[in-house]
Length: 248
Length: 220
Image 1 (tube, rainbow over the protein chains, first blue to last red):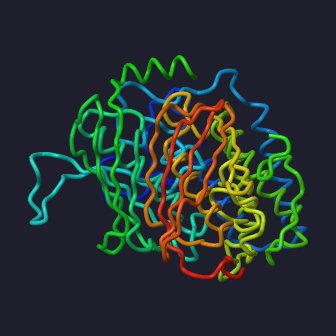
Image 2: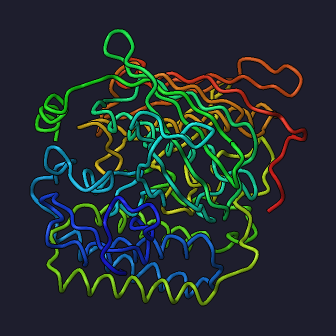
């Protein structure tokens, strides 16, 4: 792990991947364990990448598998009796990565999570004017071999998943949010592996029946490769927390 | 899940992928062990010293594998024809790849005219409390539609994907995904899909795809 960083600095290193900066987490299962849990999750990510990008002999593969199985056996003895809660304190503090550290799309402590670093910045018009203090949800990522779909390109499923999270982030920037009702993505041109991706999401309107309309796009080297529209249900945070207590 | 093709303890499945053939058991053991580690990483109470020790061992395993890096990386596809088993078409796919530890726990099959996926999602895949993450649902839809397209001989990249979440899709409850090709007009392929839990549809999807010609996957 690198230097400490504030969670809102867009130029900061990626804290959701190997080598990223320390970010304190208030989630009860993580607080005080950030450094070692982060090292563990990062090490798992590294193994995952090596698993799909190397060609060891059968013997070496078997040795690696046995050592991983032993690690899993150790962790299995240390499972909690009750599952960890999905969310940290209400409201979440410190930016989008701190509220749900085990999230499957952007969770710093979930090795399944995509290499998506989320932050927000002022929403600007084409002439670079800021729009009434409104904010833009931004997700940045460089996808490597584990996320390949068509040859040399990012998997469409990965892109759809990132948009779900970025649009949800846009809703949170206006104090709203809730489950996804619809995601409609239009893939205009190929999105390449190993090229920086910039996902943008912005809240559009609070429509009828408590529905939120949100839009977004994906840029590579300044060109839009995918555009998306999303519809979400607006649920107060206390309702979501009550559901969490009932279902966790 | 016992018997699940791309999860720990699943049955042996021979592969025609040149990087895997003859080494299926070892590759499979590696991916399965990786899946177990991934799942346990999000749910353990190891103290700091133990966590550091395990992380160091993981880093050592990564170094062991990284010493055998290949360039270019072997193909994500199996080089299989459109009549192949879905998991043979995409052996290293991040959604359903048998040999990809990140792959979702979805077992795909071809039950004409349907591409069918079966999965039970657990805690690592949680979105709203107690429910499967919307991102995961979108991802599975993309790939189950792809399988339907492949098996109909019209594979190609996604142009649009429109997913409607009609009711919660619960964790720990079996899901059944069904996709079918609705129409092919020139290069434009329209494919529909839905996911069921306890016999009720929870989400629907319609996608349009671009058939680039040919019927098989790129050579491995």
